[in-house]
Length: 357
Image: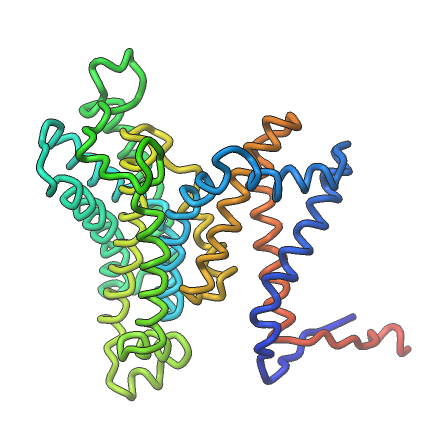
């Protein structure tokens, strides 16, 4: 028999080393699974984690995939630091895409420079308002934000399906569930012309560094950290828990909405029923892999973005199911949580009563 006993301290080395250990364990476990499936494990792991980086436009695609993950991961890190468990960024991402896409469709022929900023503001507003529903339910009715934010994510998806198959469907789209293409002005400029490198790939790391500064250097960041670590101390200090819940959810939802509008304007150019491969849920792994540190979320977002590219590469080159992406991400989260448990607790073996008898 064994039990877990608190260590009484947290190793700073392993606090940052555990994500690396979790990644190595994930690669080993994934290799074993590939071998069990009759695939060469080393080749499969190489195809999944390394070959996408050397593919044509591999780094560009990596940046495009990482941008929404970093934006949402940063927002989640701020909320989780305050002990506000927003699980529904997928829904806030979708609402941001809907609001931003709606603004883009409403201004199809506009040529003003203000169109793209208006589309971005609409997307941020959509994600923020959807997240504030969760904040209101928690502060007014003490509803669990894990459940409410998750359920609202599915409502957002069905709202998107209704819009693109109903009132917003492109009449010239041959019956496909999609809207009309956005105008070039609404799509926004490109970092490099004639590519999909939109400004989200620049905004994401800049916002991450700004959030790192806010969290570590400002009074607001201090209040978030105190609320998460010692709620009673936060109340004694006069910090308003409800205010911080509203602010953290507003920031988290706003960044998810920004990620959504960047995705549909920067890479897709229209709304469809499948605007996200699950970015909102993957962003939860990104937040924890980055240790809830906005600066650490940048490499974490790049790594999880690589799993999407790796899944595509494994599907094309090895004939594997694209579900391998979700499997890899799930194993990574499991290993990360397991490593975190061992950071806080030590395993103590003891003989059972039957063995002593």
